[in-house]
Amino acid sequence: MMNRNSATTDSMGTANIGALLFDFSIPAVVGMVVNAVYNIVDRIYVGQGVDPLGIAGITMVMPVMLLMMAASMLIGIGANALFSIHLGEGRRDEVEKIMGHALALLFLVPAVVILLSLVFLDTVLRDVLKVSEAVFPYAKTYLQIILYGGIFSAMGPGINHFIRSDGHPKTSMFTQILGAVINIVLDPIFIFVLDWGIAGAAWATILSQFISFVWVMVYFNSPWTKLRFHIRSMKLELKLTLRIMAIGFAPFAMQAAIGLVNVILNRTLNFYGGDLAVTSMGIVYSILVIIIMPLQGLNQGVQPIIGYNYGAKKYDRVIKAYKLAVLWATAFVITGFILIQAFPGFFIAVFRNEAGELMRMGIRSLRTCTLCLPLIGFQIITANFFQAVGKPLPGTVLSLSRQILLFIPLVLILPRIFGVYGIFFAMPAADLGASILSALIMKQELKVLRQLSHAAHSGR
Image (cartoon, rainbow, N blue to C red):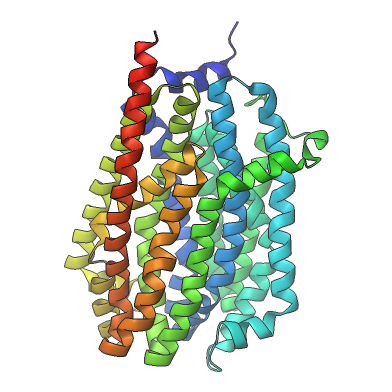
């Protein structure tokens, strides 16, 4: 007799694609929207109740936080893609081994980043990130506390991917909501009631991440799933470890590249516009998180569907799932584009509601940065597609094209011509170039998938 969990995962190869995408993506999207608030709520409270320079401080240390997130994605997303493919192939005996490797690696890899960052904290802040003296106290206080809880910020989200692919997307969504709600509740208590300032924002973040991690571990020791973490599965095998990292390298590279971009971006902003420009970009990035995070939720929802059907050689369903995800993503970013262009002042005021140079720069930079927003849904879904089918090379190329090949040169060149606003214009220019490259590569991949689908149907 087929158990309930088997029926849930096997439905990915038979159920209606639209219904599946809705069932898997909507909880993930809701979770990521809440997670977006999770990521920016510190800046909102700090901007409104501490000092706008606190926003600059959080913005300046973001590259280190992105590097920790990249370490989590390298293992969590890579192992999850392999997990889904093995389910599609019917190789359930390998699943718990993958999970065990993921848990061990999600501890070891981020730990390296965290230890190095703590040992060389002042050097990183002054010499690498080029934090100004006015912003330095905020940046150091916030980052040091975040690093103390960095292991939990990596392990919780990394393991949570397995809950979704285990056929429980709503439980996965709850995990994300749990941490976000706790952070949102604790922030005003720690910042205002206890008067901890920016340190309170950091403590609220790491405590909420710890609770999310505990909840994820409870799930895998509950009756809701037959999957378990076993100590024997955590004994690392080189071949499986390298395969997990190979598949997860594309999202890791993209996240690490974003960290590198942030270093260069913040240093350039400081040079051409000072702390005001850094604060302005910190607000713009926070608003863009609200747009990007739901797309990542859609990616998380479609990934197990694509991976399962690719493993099961149901290529027509792979194509349909990809196209539907692109359609939904594009509709979402167009809606965001319209709202941002029409009401930019409203979005800026959420972080600092006062007239002045920050409001003026914020409005202009927000409108400029989002000029090509309608294109990024397609670009993000396409880069994720290759990771979902276990092809890390094209996924890595597409992930790095925008950040490394396009954005960094534009950030270095355009401000020499247009001043600080040339930095903001680099973002839509890079979005346009990356979307064109994605279209060219995906056109060839779809051709191959159609040939495989035709061959599979002919062989029946």
